[in-house]
Image 1 (cartoon, one colour):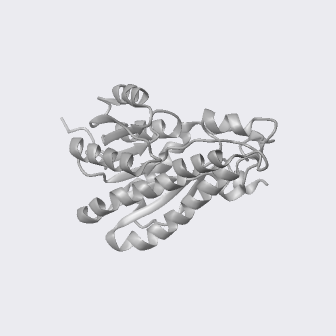
Image 2: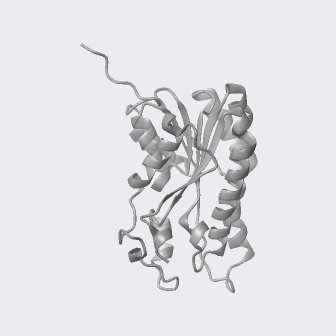
Length: 254
């Protein structure tokens, strides 16, 4: 009897932030199903533990780690925990996010800063925390979650659009700087997928419409996850500094 086929992700240590729900959860599931050792990282520890418990046994080891991605010390602590329990992070998916929608004239400085902290500043904290271990290991993959909003803009979300646009600049610069170390840095830019973003975009004040995608509907999280698997895999070994838009063609419909 032949041995069962193995996945290229067997035993690979993958850290996914914002992994207790939405896109992050689907990404964590996809890697777990491929045999990866997955760190389910979320600000809500109970939710992270519940997700990890559901994924345990589907492939490699799965652990839950609490992290407030807006705090650099919390990010470093999370990286240390993952390294101690699973090994050095080989694939980072920086995905955690929030929305604080408001029109420009009503948006508070707190709403602006909170979104910038959780998206853009957190992306830098995670990047900085994993770079040295990846260099020491001879390479790695870093995948950020941006948004079609970064490229199209969105009424009522100047904070979110600015943060997601900043992530693309961070990603491209990091790709140029880290390529010499065999660290590939890319981003996935979904359209509205999760309950969080749909709630904003379907608010009549903001005027979004699923018909503005070529496919005429919103996506499901499990339709986004394969893009992360691709960018982390051998088939993407010569791809860096790129944005993969998984948006139902919304970039083409304006």
